[in-house]
Image (tube, rainbow over all chains, first blue to last red; front, side, top):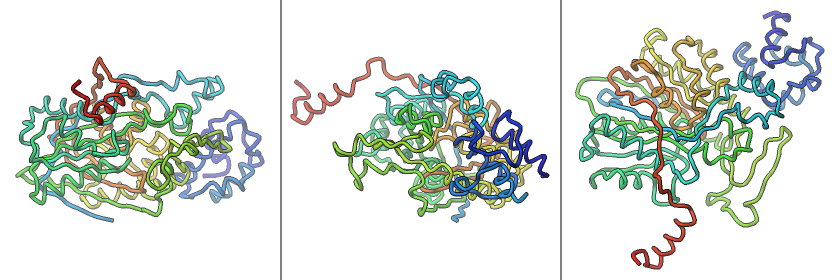
Length: 72
Length: 377
């Protein structure tokens, strides 16, 4: 998955209409809620085989942080 | 990991009952800031839909007895020939005696019938089936009535938004029998008791009994979810990671143990924790979507112990080679490879409570009379 595809997929994962970039701040998204955290966990697990936990999300600030966690 | 093969036990029939009452997530807009977009988003992400909820006077045994009576009648089972009754649930009618005793009495089963309650949640049906198959295979019994279900829908406060939209009530009855002809079945059973605190009711047992001081405890977290003394704590993220570690592997281990390929399997019945979890397991185990019902959660919600049976009973086509995959509280899990080609599928029926239900207050008054020896006055 390239970075473009990752951003498109993240839009679907978070069910947001906002245009996303690696600099998008998670807390600026109205959709960044507990449902989104679970959906992101599922996305990283099933698409990248990457396991995350609540502490990971406390330290992630941007969409780029999620992408790096995914190994992109 | 416990691997077990049985050759002479089979599920002869299954039946599920659900309560009359239900809640549709579409009617709970107030919990989504009255914003239909937020509601639709949650439906799409988690799969929220309809959940059936028993009324306050209905117990798990009431519904189990109804499911059993229906199955007995539909399959023309002779009650005199029932050797054992197993009841698996975690919300029993009384602290003592166990629900299997209550069900035995109400079903009017013979006295030389063994009974057993199994206290297990989401993985309970597969573990109980394994127990019943073991008892039959050993020659201890010829058949067993297995009752499975819980009333999580009834017992969770509707304002508990982490759990209330997830759980619905259902109870099933299965009839398990010895079969002379070979009918191999394969079980993979596992436990991680170190995860005991991932889903638990901390208060209300003997560890911390309810007191006037603790009963009103109510704590809110940063997401606006709360825990009160009468409710459970569910560490959703940890349970998700546990599920991803265990469930896809369990599915593959079970198939491998049975020497079945994905092509051999007609149906994968996965515990309907929620749509997101079922679809994640499906993706991770690389299962074909047409063999993995993932809409049962939206139709009936998470039926805990009996959720894998709800999937079976909801099928509109005959059952065949089936993989059951169940996991949850404990933490515990179980997988089974079963040939259900000749299993009677009684589907899903509605439980109607008796017209004259006795209120809790009236029941207490009756117990006071009973205690004083005045019940016949």
